[in-house]
Length: 139
Image 1 (cartoon, rainbow, N blue to C red):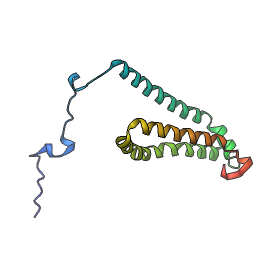
Image 2: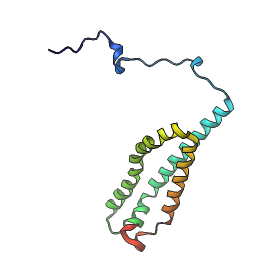
Image 3: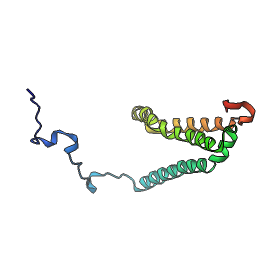
Image 4: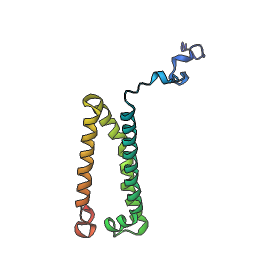
């Protein structure tokens, strides 16, 4: 005998039936408008720089493919280059799962600084990679 309640007697027990609380101006506390403007501006600038980076990579994909995958035909070069590009998007949620809780524990500013240093080191190391003609597939 199935004792589960399948009727809609208690629709609020399920999260999909709950309506989000509407926020009002009184629910939001802004301590310093100048600091808020700086934070929004910094976030927008960081986002723009990130998408600029992705745009430059996409724009140079054909050249990058020829430098790092010269033995393949043009289509394979482009697919391999964009496959490398796709890896950045695939790893982002993992970074969020790792660094999000870490930011909650030790502070977001420390985690932001740590991830920026890690990205800078990675970018520097990418700049040191020789072309395919020098070290082959290891490039």
